[in-house]
Image 1 (cartoon, helix red, strand yellow):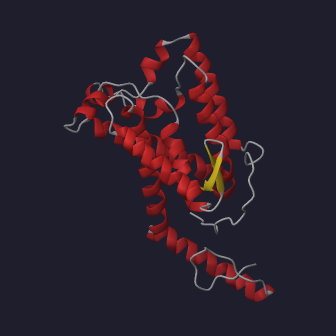
Image 2 (tube, helix red, strand yellow):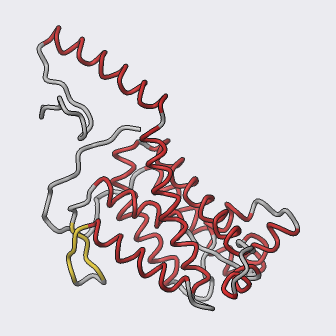
Image 3 (cartoon, one colour):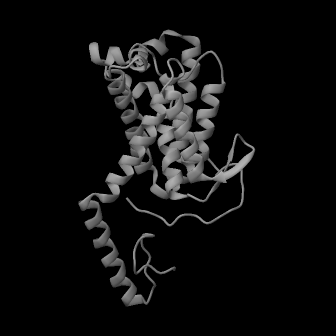
Length: 249
């Protein structure tokens, strides 16, 4: 995985610009399925994340299909999820490329679902509620994107509640703390446990990819090839932000 130096841009803007390829496909899929839910309500029960059905009936498809379902009783749920997907996902897709972006999106979404199921098996009262609940929404994956955005663009200002500009890294800390707090509740904790799981899975995935020995060897080999070209054409080398010999080019 390539790492880019954090952005130092400090200007405020509403969004990242035109919708990128993967973001467009995800938004269209979610909107189409949402209207299908409105027209046929049993879809929510058939494909939502119900931990007891995953454990008891081995309906493992729910670990992925829940990500494309939203509350059919109103537009707020899907509207804010798709807005966050566009605002935070578009720039990450430009950095990573479409293939890696989709991989990260589904790893964090499915990983959040698996952690939610595991949490529902613990001997706590909140876990009992979670075990029989039906979790829907793309928020698990979107919280993973939020975490990645904060790591790549820690100083990028984000409008908290559309009013207060704060750096992205603090925005994620606040959202993570809120998810953790609400995950301790009896009722509102159901979906927030999945949000918190999305943050954790996203962080672990990015850290494991960064420390993977094969990925590191591949990076060093490519950097060696770039340096050979540099010596031939007298071009300054690039590299990751943590390289000691990195120079601006």
